[in-house]
Image 1 (tube, rainbow, N blue to C red):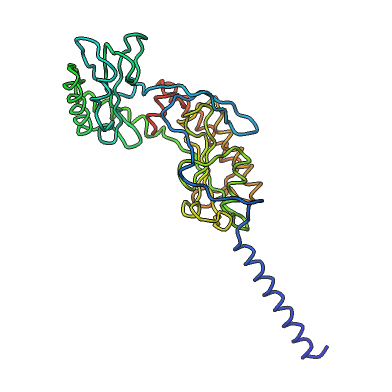
Image 2: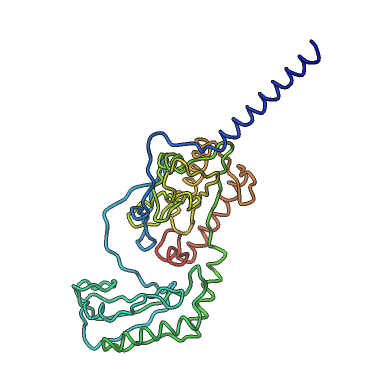
Length: 347
């Protein structure tokens, strides 16, 4: 072969390689799309459970633990485990209408929620006030700690001020616990809660082609996820209506708001489990692992930690052992994962 012919062949090969590389780069830049038409989700139509209702244990299975039941009205339950409680003495029963008319307009003292409950004269049950009832006793509570920290002196003073004004309006006489005792209890509870506040998080990183938002939603929905209240958030609902989600799958919120979900692309998803929000009996850790494996296989993704390091079987074994210890410690304080007090404390 002459030198000229050899140069021509070499040039053709180089051009072919460049063309192939360009094709592959373009292919990687185009997000993997969902099968069939898929429209962007209006944010207003997203539905996600709140953390207020009491959760019932679900059951783990090959599908997602979705088992909504009939809604039951439940008020916030003041609990001496995590609340500072003030009793409100009454000379005579008061109507629910009167109580509701004079409740504090803001149900928070700083960063802590406050609650008012009444003892229903007909049912003899403590409940959140409602209009068609009469109450022989009232009590108010302010939460001692949550994820914003321990109740402090300023927050407790705000609670006292709001409840004193409420009591004056309905003719009640409040009896508040001592501030120093309350603040000391709050700090002790926060010291316990901080090291027991666990959220398990793993990222799914695309190995090759990026994913369109439509493709992400289509894959996730096959494994029991539904749209959450916020853009870029899909959830596996709890076993009871109103219960917090078992799992949360999140991705870039700006991409989620794109007009065409088939064109907006992401390369990284985050799958998280808020341990305290779901009962151990529902086996949320098993559901978390199962979702990771299923989505990684289906979407050609790699499970990695925050630093991008691959997650191994040893990691899961270590997490499982630590999780068992955490569950036992919460139970020892009568704050089992998934209970009403645990959900409020770790919120």
